[in-house]
Amino acid sequence: MSSNSQPTLNTDFCGMSFNSPIVLLSGCVGFGEEYTRVNGFSNRDVGAVCLKGTTQDARLGNQPHRVYETPQGMLNAIGLQNPGVDHVVNQILPNLDFTETRFIANVSGSSVEEYYEVTRRFDDSPIDAIEINISCPNVKEGGVAFGNDPAMSAKVVETCRKATDKPLITKLSPNQTDIASNAKGCIEAGSDAFSVINTLMGMAIDIESRTPIIGNNQGGLSGPAIKPVALLKVHQVYQVCKTHQIPIIGQGGITSAEDALEFIIAGASAVGIGTALFYDPLVCKSINTGITEYLKSHQLSSVDQLVGTLQMNQSKPSKCGC
Image (cartoon, rainbow, N blue to C red):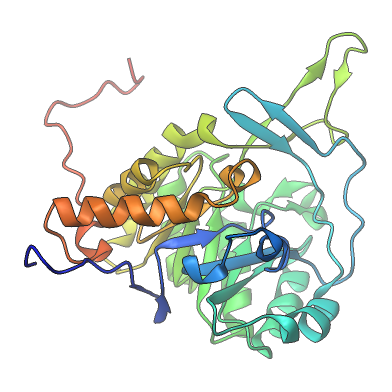
């Protein structure tokens, strides 16, 4: 790259052209319109927006409290409150401006059959891609989360694959023994990409009442506190993905350009921003600027040249991490 040329933030993700490697994460921006009411915010600053998790029928969600701030993070247990897929497809999608950015649906469910039906409805819509949230409780299987069982994860992906030709992005849970092995099974089942990672499970306790603060007793932990875990998981999944050319949206505690660059170096082709938006709605602008400056200073013309360039130390780490 010449010293006068400007690096590009444009990137290709599953055949979709992204304006930026930034993806706004599901559950953090409603159905794509919430932050557009903030002065200075624009969906054009990001590559894609993941819509709120959607189920077949409308859901009211969990009882309060649903959100609780923790040191360097946030617990949430919203309970998939949403108006149902028919309302989203018929009433919400027609009002989105698809010239601004790419829009990705987030499919959730309590059974394999529900995942299929919701995916099928989004297939017959202008949505650009579909993210499968396999971290929901599998009610028919005794409350076990789909995402923690490799066989069930692959089954959901295989079923959704039959319902759509749109790009399928599988959102992987960190609450499992071997995330790389799970990713391999999902690739074989038809996943085109991954979101890594979903929230870690956590709890907060009111010491006066001696009860959990979150109405659901436990919730998903997000924010800077989970970043080191997320980075490792992205690196582990990338080892499986790189030979198959499967892209990853790296996410978990990204609040700055430096954070985003770490995820890209670890193997992410795009980066997800979520919790940071709650206290800095304009954080995407500064992240874009920081990534551009880094590329220019290192004489790189695009983000693609940086993906997966992590050089591991030669010494072998202890299995216990000590």
